[in-house]
Image (cartoon, rainbow over all chains, first blue to last red; front, side):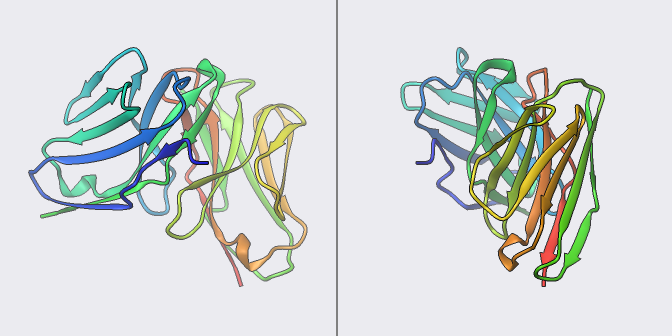
Length: 113
Length: 112
């Protein structure tokens, strides 16, 4: 049973517009959530995170929103740039700072010039 | 900050041959370590994790094994590779800060 789900395997957006990537989870015990970005043939890199006690975290063009009642989080990229084209993984943490992450299957974002 | 070294970057191996992928970590001590595999068009599958020397947990039954002979060394092995072992293998270490994991650059394994 998948505890972290990214239901859209791919998303295509025009340069300059907003990209919205979605993630749903089932376990209310997750204590924070993260987004990773992965280019082909490279390891994922950390992008942004949010604690379960927050509902929004912003870092430059990237904002993550958390809706605990809906068990849903989303990553907004504004404005989208061609260099943002990558696979984005949503992850949920349980067990505190030495716990394990559970990853979604990823969403491939394509930003077209 | 910690750095993950993973090698080789690419590997082509015949079916039935052995495998050894090595991962070493710098900049931290006693990290939790992980091996993931990303098959073509798929997500990240957790294969093994380790909380300390010689302490390995396997997440899925398979043709692979892992060992941690030293605190900052994590090795993925197989005695006889299968075609289905092809994929992109990633080593990761738990970050003590808010970034979750730090990943290595990965090994692309093709079994032919």
